[in-house]
Image (cartoon, rainbow, N blue to C red; front, side, top):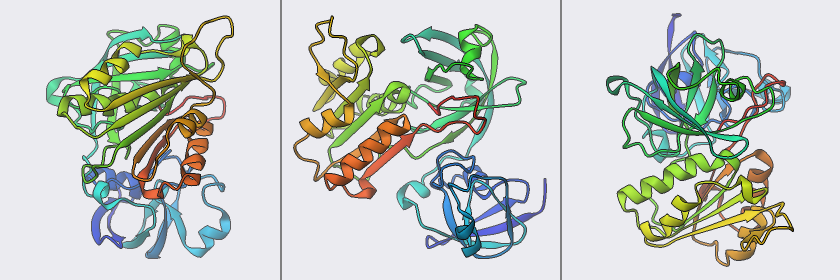
Length: 352
């Protein structure tokens, strides 16, 4: 471990202590301060902040996330920033309710309990962690998974409710040559195998201070954190009206339909709307067709007073945000979890 330094976060006035060997973002997570973040690899700019005072250095990062002229002005990426003195940082992208309600990150070694096919390219993976090492989390958050002894990790959102202590359920999309998912496809990571877990991370959680209706937009394995939120709503009998628009290519790409339709009975006011972008003309699909964002735009007449949660691949998330902004939804009511591509170009695996 290196020398420790104080980090003051403005304008919220929070002080944390960070080691020189860790990033400011990781140091905040370790102490339960949930700063805004995305990829944690210097690729997305979600944690971009302004250095007011102090000496820092940064690990390698993408200049798309932080152009050279912004670095020269004093901007930093907290996921890449190491302190070499006490520093003061101004946050520009934060949610104070979430910022102060984080859970300190923990590490544990669990065991893969189950690997099952949900679709041709999405697998359900269940990991069991000893109860004494169970990692608490909030619905909508994610953890880093590392095959025991491996030199890499991948990040995936939990699909289950936090009440299931010691149990972690995931919906993992498989990619050609994906470094993690190929282990699942080849049976090289399966029931009985140890796996290291670190977390929780993520801001895709219900804001308890709001009672506005909820609009969920998801695609592919982006169903995972939304499923967790719906399961939380069922368990806690949260009565906020909610609609879930889920996009898939074909009917064979849909899954968990029975549970999602059951939520229409479990939840007080819930609608589930699946939409197929490539509906097979030879089938008699009775539901909506087209891109899920277009379907939601067409069917949702009033978006003036909603909180929106969007999760899926980047094109879907970008299209959803553009649609919501055009419809006048304030930025602070749009919460999204965008899949990010791992820094190694040949390993195209999503965050969920």
